[in-house]
Length: 150
Image 1 (cartoon, rainbow, N blue to C red):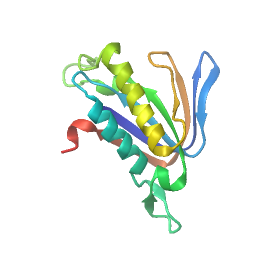
Image 2 (cartoon, helix red, strand yellow):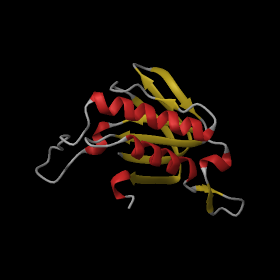
Image 3 (cartoon, rainbow, N blue to C red):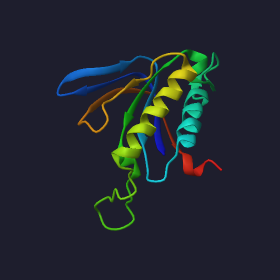
């Protein structure tokens, strides 16, 4: 699984010009699931998102986590994170997991993160054409790949 984690002042998801989810200060998480990904990876990534220290402390140092600031999270599925760009100019998505694996792992990730935070993780709609609006704070953007954890 691969995540793009963005520290935001606010973020929202729209479908057909209608807002379906929004958060204030916290993390916008774009999540891509690859063939072969497992539940343990979703658990590890959820724990990482809850605990990664990318929010400023009173001295302005990135020393606080989403848990520390009681921040919110918005998770949006994004199969394009699995793109291979090695050959040619058209990305290949052959590594992207199908719905039968990707949907359950997306839901497991969101459920685990909700449990860790003690609040609902807001979501996009899996497979929908979404417009994501955000105000990136910093900007701070981190890429986390579960296959690179060891």
